[in-house]
Length: 302
Image 1 (cartoon, rainbow, N blue to C red):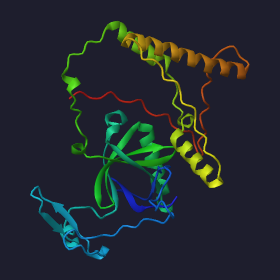
Image 2: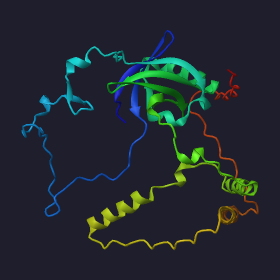
Image 3: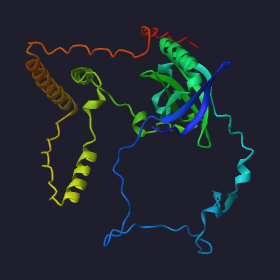
Image 4: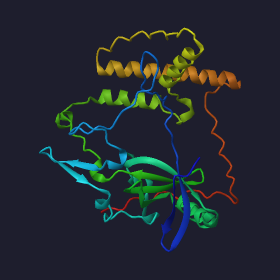
C-alpha cells in the first residue's frame, strides 16, 4: 500500500506521527468508452458553451450557479482565507461508546500507521482505546475538506472512519410511516421465528460478487475466443397467498437449508451433532497478554 497523507494524532499534549492509507478498494471491472468499429479510445474536449472554444485546464475555475441561471466565478484566491485546517492533525475531541455512533454517518475507512518515533505512543493509545470499548471522535482535514471522523481499533491498527455531517443525512419521509398498519401477533411471531432460523455467525468470506465473477468470465472468454455460456435461468416461485403464508414458507425453507448444512458438517466431522465449535482466537503478535475489552457502560440518562 502507498500512503496518501501524512500527519499526526493530537491527543491532549501527546502527538503521534502517522501515515494514512486507504483501507478499502473497489474491485469493479473497469471499462473505457471506445469506438465500436475499431476499438479506438473516445476523448472529450473541454469546450466553453458561450464561445464554443476549447478551454485549457489552466483557465478553468469553479462556478456557483444562482437560481436565476447566473454564474458566480470563484478563483484560487477566493479559497485562501477559508477556515480549513492545514496543520495535518487528527484532533481527538472526545471518547464515546461505539453504539452511540450510527453507521449511517460513516463515509470511508483509512488505516493509520505510526512513524518509527511514534510507535510507542501509538501502541499505548491503541491498547487504552481497545480496552475501554470506546471510539474516539476526531476532526481531520483531507482533500480540501474538513471531516468529522471516528478512531477505532481493528486487528491492532487504528482505523479512521470519516463521517458525514448531520445535515448531509436525509430524514426518511415516506407516506407509509403515517399510516396505521396493523400487524397481527401471529405474523410477528412467525417473522421472529424466521429471524431465529436464519441466525448465524457473520463470515464475509462466504459471500462473493457473482455479477463481477460472471462479467470477468465473459471478458476471459472474449480474450480466449471461446463461446460465452449463459447460465440457466432459475424458475420463478409462485407468490404466497398472504403474508403469514410467506413467512411460514420462509421459515420452513430456512430450517431445511440449515438442516442440510448442519448435516454436511456433521458427516464431514464424523460426529452426530451439528453444533459448531467456537473459532480459535487468533494469537496476537504483540508482546503481553491481550486485554479483555471493558464492559460497555450504560448510557447516562439526560
